[in-house]
Image (cartoon, rainbow, N blue to C red; front, top):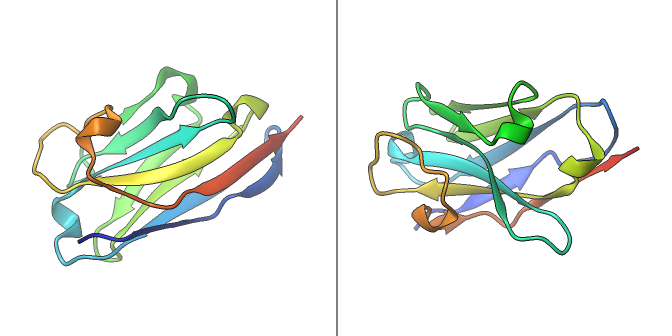
Amino acid sequence: QVQLVESGGGLVQAGGSLRLSCAASGRTFSSYAMGWFRQAPGKEREFVAAISWSGGTTRYTDSVKGRFTISRDNAKNTVYLQMNNLKPEDTAVYYCAARTVPILVPPQSSAAYDYWGQGTRVTVSS
């Protein structure tokens, strides 16, 4: 059983920055691929970013490339999402997810992840 707890959301003006954190339980966190997803009001959950178990491979959706950075600290069982130059369209509830089945390339599909956090809300005002 893996528990994920996100933090760091809030209200920010367009152009501002936030850093989301996701703290994970479990002794084998360093073997998990991790992902960030978001869901805006009235929309489906979408992929934002993912990182491999080692941190050596990262993937981003096109709309956040160059603005968001995913990273992890396996010693702290934590994955981060640094969000810069935020835009109103980034407003959503952000979820972190863990894939405990080993995989080389972190997946973009939500179906590939087996544990989810409760989400943290990010609101970007214009």
